[in-house]
Image (tube, rainbow, N blue to C red):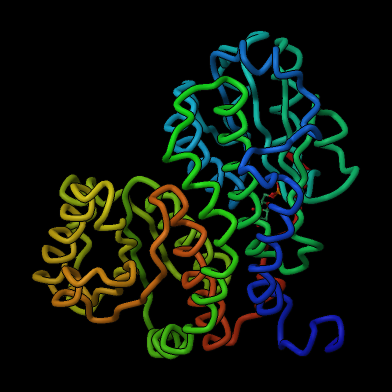
Length: 372
Ligand code: G6P
């Protein structure tokens, strides 16, 4: 009913709007006044976490994209090797797991069969499993050694939005906690990131307030067949997530690419007026990547692409090459997906509406896939 949707036309719109609160709720009570993480609820003893020599993340769909970003955070902040794998591929390739492997299973519903089977396989091999889950008492946390709940609240729309942002938050917390427990690389950068995390809900809110041009742009593209998405580092999973949203909701051909791969094939797809969304890393920090992406934008634009550029506030280098510029607040590099994904959700939702599609219940899809 309309009341359930809180006055919005679709659950998806409501859930997009709830993201600042979902993010804040997922942080609540997990960072103490001195900026340390208090994750006692993760019932894997610190002694065990100190012995972990490999992290493996398993998930499906949108949760898998959160896992790809989590890998970058975990390796950067803890120096523990980490791989992220599609749950449906994982157990069929005889993965290397033992008592020192920490497996993180990410799932909004806690009922996805592929993810459940992957974690069962991991536990059989002696690995410890930590679930990152949004649904209290669901099967995946029940069968795991420990759980860190995301506090997104119920997510009804099939296409995941607020659950994704909270999965990212939970994964950042796990990464930082592993770093804290192990004493690795704990320094100014990590303290700054924890401070920035506390402000991030406000940044998401800022993005939400500036989405009207994105909706207008989406409506203008309703007749297109294809949209491409490019990104690098954390921007690459964001590009994949943007493309997934568009497939799910707009039934359009949408592909995400690592921008560095452009020259190895995808650039052949560029033609006159093809919309290409580019997620631009911060010009601060890893500025080498920033400059490389700016060259990519120039290259595709020279070949006729219509460039839709998502770039940090104050990044002036992109301005001459952006047909459409979507601004996001500056964040630490690894946290950028929390703000960069939001315009892509709005974009896909509006395109779906413009194309007359059912937003909350896309054809052929289920909220939770409980078969393999
Ligand atoms: C389905 C949903 C996706 C979701 C995926 C994983 O395919 O349509 O939105 O990302 O399952 O779901 P989970 O509940 O495990 O996060």
